[in-house]
Image 1 (cartoon, rainbow, N blue to C red):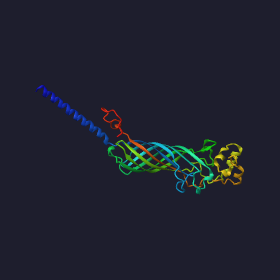
Image 2: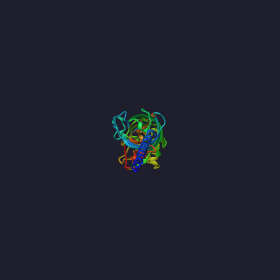
Image 3: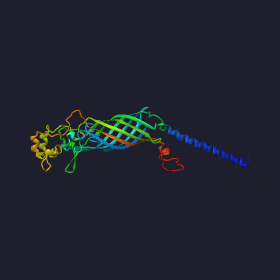
Image 4: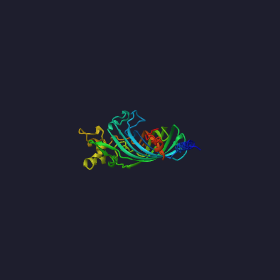
Length: 316
């Protein structure tokens, strides 16, 4: 065999080797795409709406008075259409009398509150389309419903003399309540597939609770405990209790302080809440976020594309 033939033969072997190696690498990369990784992580943000003694969206036309919330969550596929989610949230909520509907007869109370709560919850999600599928085969749209249980801090505050005061330790209604409450999240949402690894999420979540003290208001009026409030005020032991419990201008003097004589003559019939024992507070969040389906090859196949030659960020 002459020298030219030998060179052509070697070149042929090299070409065949490179083609085979390229095909194998491409096949391995696609093979990695095939498998659904059970774990994912998400983050979302959106408005919060509180429902309680200081707000009623359903009965009166008071509009939406939102605060905001943010959360991170970890997800795991546990069945063909089922996923479990553990969620950690920071939730702001508030309510006040001045913008309330006059038909609610709440404006004269002049009450308000705010809360900055931390929540941990676990939910089970049921999806319309199967989720136990390879990543590349996830549907473009996938609506779902969910239900779960969780725990939240409960620390309502009110403003007094320009400072925000914690209301729970003061027990304004002589009815101590817990610092932590049980919540029952439930709602619906849907996901939109952006690429093999990432989804855009939309979710509405209403939390039912077993407390009527998320806003520190429950009793219809102060008639059952007004003598204790007055005693704390007159004695100077804790005058802030009466000042925070009764803020109705009709029961304040010219200096904006409680008019003790008028409160006593009225036998404490100063309006506070609904007085319904079966009515509990709740709140709703509506969030938009991103969910990333975690995989060991995510940096090879998603973050960097053709990383040997290009070394550049890849979104798709």
